Image (cartoon, rainbow, N blue to C red):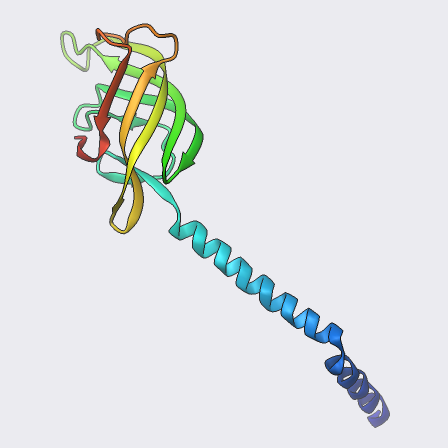
Length: 156
């Protein structure tokens, strides 16, 4: 039995003194540090959008008036998303609130979306301004314009 331990120790000593051991150790340390750096950067580089006072990541819906939800964009699909801005498409909807918002009729339009004006909020990167325009160039429902824009940071 002692002979096997000594033989095992010799193999370990040979491996420890070889270049392969150094390469293996450097690879393991590099992978560990690289993984940590990747995850840390991903979390700290996350870009949000202000949506009714809440920092949200790639929302599928954005409201213009948070108190009554009568105007907003739903079913959003993002094409680009970065600290410089975001682009996507969605369905604009507006309630005519006639005779009341509960009984009102909803109108819809397919729109293109651009988010911009990045700034730091609660130590996070956030996009705070939205511009929309109809995809087909017609006016937005209940509007005399094919586009709209508003500061999302102040919505509500």
